[in-house]
Length: 544
Image 1 (cartoon, helix red, strand yellow):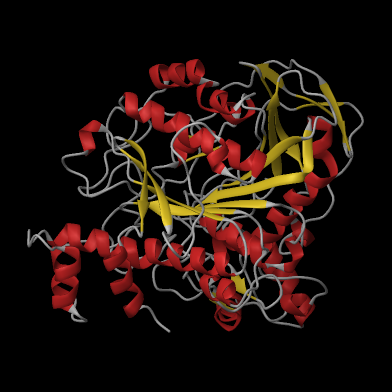
Image 2 (cartoon, rainbow, N blue to C red):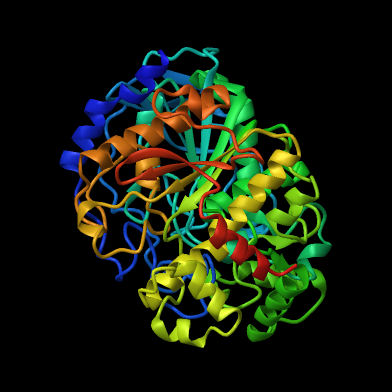
């Protein structure tokens, strides 16, 4: 497939998706479009989105769309390490769904590193994705989307998707009304892998007694992600993939995980490129002491006493509802825990600045109103005290007095745009190719009301699964944006250079230009030193 075909392949299928997809979104608050923005003072990136009955859950919006009956089996049977699987063929893509990549983390396996999945003797029907980790603990399933006609040993590039959801919601195959179907990538010659990882307190939990057990602890969701990468190394050749050309990409919590995987030695060599969409690179991990204190509080609340072994056994017998996934300002909310082995006690920006990350090609970026439950109210603006006059000069040079827009821009820059710039600068300084994007596309209905493209807005465009969304019907440019981003991501997976796709040039980030490719409502365009005055102002106020 040549470079121009990267943009045009799958256009018919993408148009069909646009015509037939039903809307599963609700309209967002004013000032946000196509994502999860809202107004909840004090909430942090990834505040509680768990669904009722979820591990650590409370009511939320993270459930995948209601399941439909799985299609009948079709397509080739594939032999992998644990047995044989058969999926289904649809629109030139063979899909293998719900393959166990680890043993169910139940009973004594709760809060342990993932163990090997059991082998099976019959051909396993793999046409449905399996339970999500938001709904059940037996949830460690993996899905593969590969081009029709693939052969073992084809050495096609591989992309592994890590979903977002605040570490309490979401799923590999879909989440928050957005499909993660990898068909549009597969039709461009890329093998796509999606999977579930443990969420809430099943995935992120510490207790002093647990931490005395042998092995790694605390970050069980991250261990699942590493196990999925190891599964790819062991099995993806049979699906036509190349285990030596693996790109990890993710959004929000998935992007945080992607960046953590770049830093942890446990994942070194298991993947070769990375894409981080809205990954909050200055977010600090949960201190180990705070995570252990939460575990101890849970022990006390459930009247558990005894030896370390007795305490651990009793904690494992409790339902996960006994371990609520707190959010907001709670220092022990479900997030990566700084155990010093899998997760370092520092932000991603600090880790990059200390040259601790894998020196692999990276795409990093965010959206133009990239907030999650941030307070953009006029009252929040009025409460600001630090450098207020300078802030107004930078964020409202026309003196419009629109306090909510100022807050949206400022908080987006503080949590996302400036940290992305800092991570890009450090990664380039460490000698690694880096590409930066800025997603600002809005549907026609949102262009007169929204402050920008909200958190999550880009995901349906990345997969090319563009349909009706929160901001109203997409236009032709929206369809084109889906084709363009999907092609850039595919080219990056193939060659380590998104500019290998046809379309506007995507220049590497360097100190001279700090080039950013903006995906705007009028098409892609290159920016140099994007929002420099704003980001410099924000940088000056970041904690040292």
